[in-house]
Length: 255
Ligand SMILES: C[S@@+](CC[C@H](N)C(=O)[O-])C[C@H]1O[C@@H](n2cnc3c(N)ncnc32)[C@H](O)[C@@H]1O
Image 1 (cartoon, protein in one colour):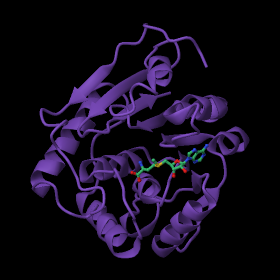
Image 2: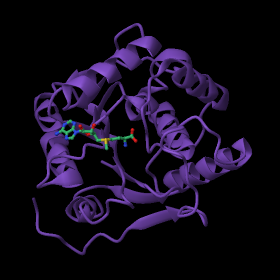
Image 3: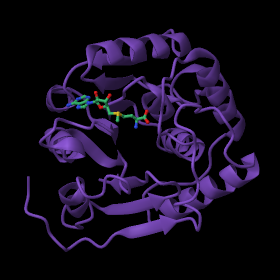
């Protein structure tokens, strides 16, 4: 792990209500705000990412996204999730806009985050054909549930979940990665600090223009200090933008 540095200033997009916008973690499909407001917030976030040169454009198919959202609500077993409706839409849109052939998601729990990341590649929200989307979850029983959930939405197997340590999977992944999603909460020593280890293990296979998405950039900022300093340092990555549209946050970094 590198020493913390102060080179990278956080480039930030934030909504005025990021710290008061709240979901019920146990009722993930409950509307939190009018749909038009959710769409406007995510459009603004995408515009900020486009302005920063992180994504090539800011357009995605809103009807396809709603088909994806409906299928997840009908087919997934989700005991709880901290993925807010805004974040679900943003993750889907980033997948739809960047269309990575290979996608790796680390720490997927019941699969809800993973399917938001891969929702533009498989199932009713698909807008492109990916080669392989892999979700990694270290707890075997959670990985089994996540895989069950994903199979109900993607019969092809292009998206699937494995029970393993994301650091090891990232190190051995044989393809060029277009999107790396980080959500693993590690062990007692590292906690979310494990994001740095997963990124480090995958680093030489991240293709130019790849996105690295780090969830909990707000509420786990303490444990993510080293990670955030690293990705915000322009000597390491082309651009990094802190998206604050809910209380969890998402750091979006571009290779
Ligand atoms: C807090 S959950 C993510 C939940 C997600 N943000 C949501 O709202 O649905 C983090 C997951 O990472 C998993 N995890 C922890 N360390 C891991 C590792 N080294 N590799 C893969 N998964 C890991 C945990 O078992 C846990 O299910």
